[in-house]
Image (cartoon, rainbow, N blue to C red; front, side, top):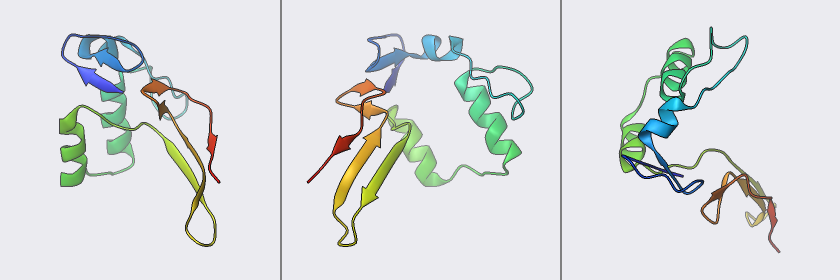
Length: 98
C-alpha cells in the first residue's frame, strides 16, 4: 500500500488524510483508539523500540508491506507465502508454491 499526499485509490493508494482518519483500537495495549501514526509511535515507545536508519529509509519511500509470513522447506525453497499486499491489494489469500 502506498501512502500519498492527496490521492486515494483503495487499496493500492491511500491519502495521508485518509490514513490519519483511520483508528487503530488495541484494548489493553493502548489507552484509546488512535490514528495509525500515533499508534505506531505509542507502541514503539511502550516497547522501547528505537527507529533505526533502515526503518527511516523504508518509511521515506511511502511504500511498505504490512504483514508477511513465509514457509520454507528444509532446502530453503519458499513453499507458502501470505502477505497483506498481494497484487497491489490488501488481504489476499495465501499462495502455494511448488
